[in-house]
Amino acid sequence: MSRCRPLAGYRALGLTVCLVVLAATCAKGAERAEIPLEDRLIYSVSWLGVQCGEMTLESAPVEGKPALVRMRMTLRSSEFFDRVYRVRGEIESIYNARRHSTLRFHEVSSEQDETKDDLWVVALTLGKARRTYNGREQSFDLPPGGAHDPLALLYRIRSLAGAPGSE
Image (tube, rainbow, N blue to C red; front, side, top):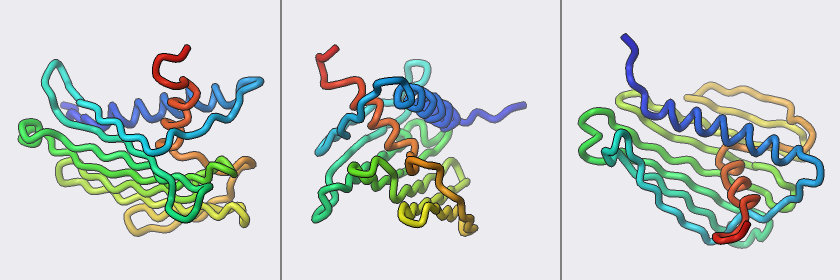
């Protein structure tokens, strides 16, 4: 019997978002749009008509560093849904808008009794990224063009879509 995993839907959504943004970015003539700053969006998450949680997306400039943008997503299951499946999570991304690359991505989340701590730190000048996942470290070479995390890609899609009411 399979166990229901509500965050699997978020992961599938994240993968879909990444693929759509990659296709949009690679399309001929695609322009780089700005990430919305001083932005806060609150989403109600429901499943089969039952309100099961809330997700918040925020973005703001990093104080004293005009090229850097801090993006944050938090998610939390409702009190009612906690009895069925408790979910808490926070993702923070620091993005260099001038270089169009992620510099730091940190996700801390928990589902039931399982906790995840995933930190990525990007050194653009060295062409390297370091990942620390639940205490284990790995190093990677960066592809040309820098690195893009799922949260930065979500904001990229929003910026490509344009302002509310635009076509």
